[in-house]
Length: 444
Image (cartoon, rainbow, N blue to C red; front, top):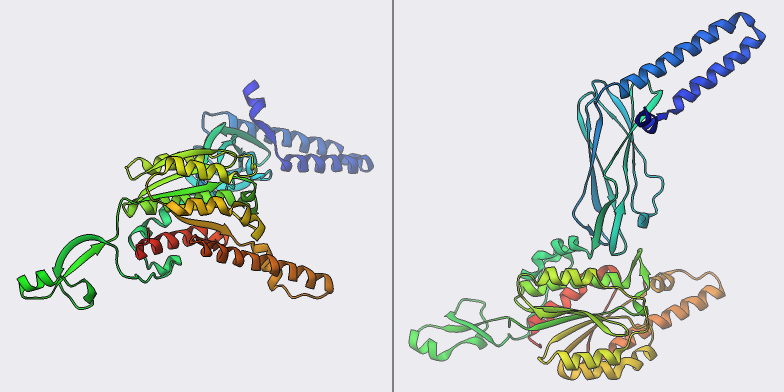
């Protein structure tokens, strides 16, 4: 009996019926002849309530609900949540589904209504977009079942306290997986990269075919074979590529609900996969007050899993970043010349100048690429039409800051430091482009 009371809920339709009966009793006060008839109506309603309770609780039949999802959620992407339903009752039912979504999504009004025929199966899909890494706890999957009488409901509860971790965007990883094998996948927005010369890693001597570079003709082999032979080269392999993530306060700026730090983490995961597929060694580390989350550059099979776990575990209080510590760490731990892709952000030229000595020190022994971000809100302000003096003033200030971003690019170029100035949503594509360009030009 206690179980029945815990699962029993009265529907709105029952209250409407009771309100109607109260109204009839009010009318019967003025027309006494209706008084006994109204009591008969009340008895009929009580009888139907008992029948409804018997229909829902009188058998061991139930509506089964199962919440299905991936073992982990992909940060910044739409993740599908699938609810499988199975009606075991011998009559059609109405369902009200309330899924207790993790508090991070701040959705307190999740409710789905469905109708299912007798002894049939159904399903419902919805999507969630997490915007931060970490553990997400789903509560109860509550299913309220109503018979055709619609007077009471029976609640079934499933999947209590289900924890799902949210990892860096592995959906992007799958999307861009084939980029490792081509430099001209225009459907993804990659630009075509023109090769300047060729790299110096010899592969084989082959017969000349139309279109081969005449500068690669091997004259000794041509004399022996009595036909044109050319040297064939390939991209140099097993080069070290480190992605360095600044997790200081400059990376706290939000864009489309994600912080710049999470955009950098997602891009790092995708780029690491591309690097390993290109037979290079991928490594990562993050820094703020100290250097952490280090993965030494390798191309072994377990490397991607190790990188993903370290990216997932990046934690920060967004302190002021210490570039001097970064310089010392790079000098101490990275002995071989490597490509270092640094994800950070500079808003002003003065901010760059404070860190420039350390960047120049790193660039002496390594190929350094600094990736930083355009302020998209400033772009909107620049292109907005000004209607008064205050808006003109705001627009001029915004243009000044945008111009400083371009000055930062020129300042870095002056010291042989490559840069990528990008918008957060284009970060992954732009960094892949830059890596493929460096590989094509053989400048590492």
